[in-house]
Length: 537
Image (cartoon, rainbow, N blue to C red; front, side, top):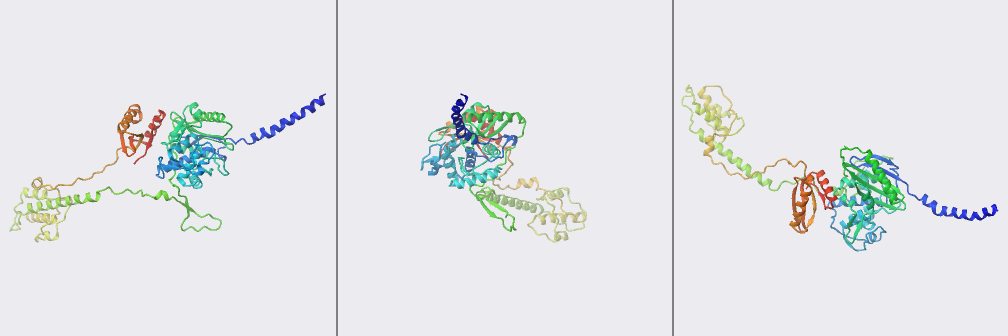
């Protein structure tokens, strides 16, 4: 009986074993590896790391680099947010998540950026890369150059969107570094990553991780990622008071479990981070653009077994000179000043000659009559320059002086003084301006205006913020006044200015430091007010 029951139960065991091998075991074997890192964003201190340098599939975390390069290209004038991008067949064919672009369609870059940042649209990311570098391969090369410049030493990019591709790998550490650079290198665009919804031109897109943004206090970004090979990834940032933490997780089993893990690590980070930590922004890499030429250094002849020294030439970095131009009109402004000085000198010479003309030498050079004190005082007052002038040899010898120069006229007066007083030859004293009486009788020539420069007293307050473009000056002034009254903590003392262009009226505040402008934008964006920073110049 027992044997019959055992034989009857054997098929059931076989079925269970088959199900386990076919369905359950592959799922466990295919589970993506777990990795994590927690960093204090203010100074880059690592507060927790697990498997942080293992190369794994980043999935859509890749789009952080795509967007970083887009921000760089806009800032350096390669492209603008209003540039119309023509969608290629390659971009339109990208699988979901997608914006729904069509081949040949034209759409502004700003809408592609919003779709990639908020919805993680693959077609939008590809269109961005092709618009900036011309092709997916060229943009991938730029991504890799930028990654090296940022210090992402274990990352290799093959595409703009992060869909699984052989060799397309990164680490939790590198993605944390990238998230920190996105935050601090381009703070004017960082608000994109905290928007729960955004207008992408052809439709409204919604954030891929709205739940975490809502549930975790202080969370304001940054990017999610998912593929079967990668699992559920997330680079998140949160700010509480003066503390900001960046947490990265690779290989989550689901959205919910990943968010829970990130929240736990965030709490750990806030517990370990110091309250009073000085802000040390990461160094922004040099701008290279689309250039990536590598040349052999001149004079380098590597021997066998040695590598040649290479120099990376950045063409885009030297397309404009950083030497300042001369101020307009400076050459013309110098000539009138020199002419006026020359006129002054000639007038002073004439005054000296006229004053010294009545004073003829005495017939008897041995006379002991003293020179009147008034004559001596007048001789000293009639000097015209603040320099000591030695009498000419001819004047000391008693020969006739050559009229027409200040030196000769003064030398003549000095000679007379020596002869009368029978004193040794002396050097003319330091010359001083002409007498007040002479100045009263001499007309002062008119002078052109002189340009006087001074050091800046702005105290480094060369930054500003822009609250958007409006259809009328009244609307722009209205939003400026309303904002100034509601945000006195950061905008007190800032200059309100409406900038008119062909596109409309920009509402701007000027005279802020970088930190104040960044803080003002964060506070305004938290109240759903459009705001982005404006750098010096």
